[in-house]
Every structure is written in C-alpha cells, then in structure tokens.
Image 1 (cartoon, helix red, strand yellow):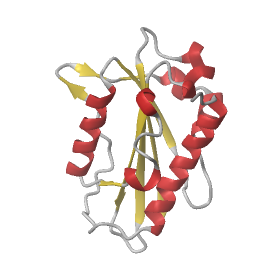
Image 2: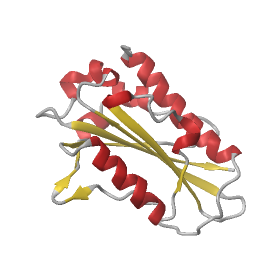
Image 3: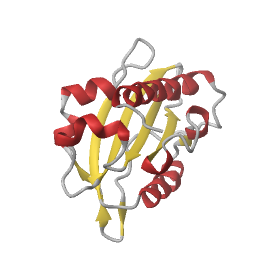
Image 4: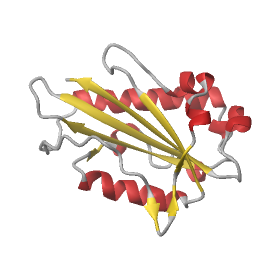
Length: 174
C-alpha cells in the first residue's frame, strides 16, 4: 500500500494528538514521581543516533509533524539519523523509557503494524504528580529512508541512506 506524505503527515499529527488525548483521558498507571523528563539517546555497542537539525529546522517538515492546540501546549521536535537497526532502536526505547518512569501508551494510539517494515511508533507519558498534574508526552517515530512518509523530503534527509528517528515532546495539563 502506498502512503502519501500528506497522509502520513496527517497520521503523525493525529497520532501525537491521540497520544496526548489518551494521556488526558485514560486512567494512568500508578504515578511514579520522577521529575526527569529527558529522553535517553540510543547507543548500542558504539552505534548511536546523531542529531540532524537540517530536517528538524525545515519549516515545511515541522508544519507537517508538529501539532499545537489549547490542550497540548507547545511541542518540540528533534530529528536523528542512524544506521542502527529499526528493531534494536525500538527495543532500546521500549526498555529504557519505562526504567526512567515513563508509562508506555503506544498500544492506545496506533496499531503496531501500521507502518509495516518501513518504521514504527512508540508513545510514552509521565505525570509530574502536581495538582493539577502536568503530563509530559514523548512520541518516537522511526522510518527507513525509503518510507513513503518521507518521500517529499528526500533532499533534506540524512546522507548515506540512514534511518530517521523523530522525537516529539510536549505536555498537557489534565
């Protein structure tokens, strides 16, 4: 099935919105108060991700993947390039984020097979424990360079046929 960039961009916006809405409307797991909202950087036996600001700063790209409204507050985008295997990176974040107090909300927002062999999506949330609580959310999206979602950005993609990892962060008051 061929997916257009516009449709994939809309799907990414919808996914982040659903992540934030799921965080706002779901009964959370017991709150683990840990005020460290940083996202770990993938590193496995020297294979790392490298921040790729050229794509992160591209206004056309940002407008397609970031959503901002009264419920979500501002979002931030980081883009990384890597030669690491998609599944290795997914396993890293699926393991490390919960260790750092993040609740995995991936299953609530997207079918695990939605991107097929061309990528994956993970979603996490963490409340600050305040009253009213502020929920911090992270969406991680990884694509192969051949993903239909990236076809309109071929000129801005990382060199050497590297995979692309998007990290979108935001927060929402419940």
